[in-house]
Amino acid sequence: MMRLVYHPAGHDDDLRVALEELEAGRWRTTGKLLLDTGTHWALRTSRTQMLAVAAARSDVVGVWLHEEPGSYDAQVMGARVAVERALRAHRQRHPGTLELEFKARREVILAARRVPQDPVPWVCLVALAQIDTRQLRHEHRAVPAEPMLPSGPWGLLYEVNQRDPYNREAYHRVLQFMLALDGPQAASLAAIFDFGRWVVSQRPVRSPLLLLPAYAQVEQRRRSHADPLWRRQWAHESTLDYTLSAFYDWFRKAPARERSVADLNLLAYALWAGHQYVEAAEVFEAMGPYAAREPWASVHDGAAGPDPAAALLLRARAESLSFARTHRPRTRPHP
Image (cartoon, rainbow, N blue to C red):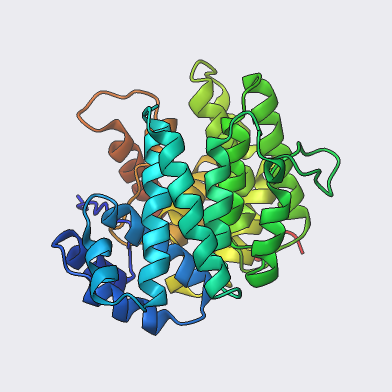
């Protein structure tokens, strides 16, 4: 049986090394990684996000800032870490959340002023919006261009789009903002479904945002475990259209190093649950041993065993690969 590897870097070997070095208290590999990443904004965004999660547990970025006070990459990582700590405090309902948010916002704005073309500080501002669950800040209650969507940080998202159109993290942060708002649960679920459909309607080719409707579907499951027929929804024509669009227009067209472990796992599940086994097999092959806890932890049916989520992943993988060995790939069923 395949041994699953849970690591956020996936196939990004350079990021994996940098994460290991950060956890050991060493920052120079991170500095070189970000220098090499340059202005590849999508990659810079995803790498700084994962690096910040690791760095937030220590003062390694503070040491970097002390040793290289003129480094912009160190400054951005300092802002990233401050945002990660504020979000973590918010999730834990820590009494110091607002103070941490204020500090993070100040550091992010300084970074945005220093290098205006970098989308990462603006992504950070979108991320901080989810702490403002009552939309007290005016930039968090802007009116959207799409009338079906609620008010939100649309001006901040616009600023990100000006620098890196369809930035994955920025759109996922908007989704998290909608889910965090005070109000009825059904309203927030409806909003993220509308948001996902609206984004997909813009046909962002080679973008993992084509998976936003699938993320909304999993969130629905996470909040309503009782529906025994939930998995059948993945085989419905409307859902399959979104899933196959993500397969053909993102998975098949995007560079391999830009495909995150989280997105690959969700697409593999959506294809398998929708009975698209040949396509699912292709995604499982691309994943290799790298796994994510989600969506498997939210969609398993409670089977016996120490890790039912991993058991479901391995079952879906085995069934898909077995089917693909005796069936040819189909031509694309829709334009």
